[in-house]
Length: 107
Image (tube, rainbow, N blue to C red; front, side, top):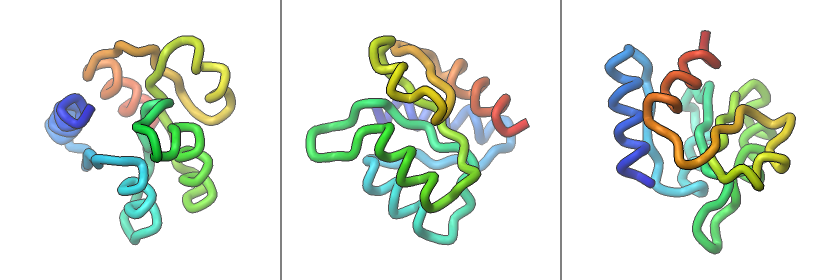
């Protein structure tokens, strides 16, 4: 949800963090391959058909950036697939919960 992501970006910016909302997992992979510093990846566990799921995205991100932290947002039945890969937030979640989790991981 790009509107949700943009709200999270705005809240992180208000707290003096640099953040960007990207429209798709493939766009996120392009950013990871670039020279941009990425410390935290926030992703849904499931994306649109034809796009990598969040677990695949996290694994690809880690292959490019070993230390990247990952926050997954998904339904409770998807949580086991993310074990050991990052922090899981149950959907629906709030912008505040995503932001607080991000800040905690960066501290």
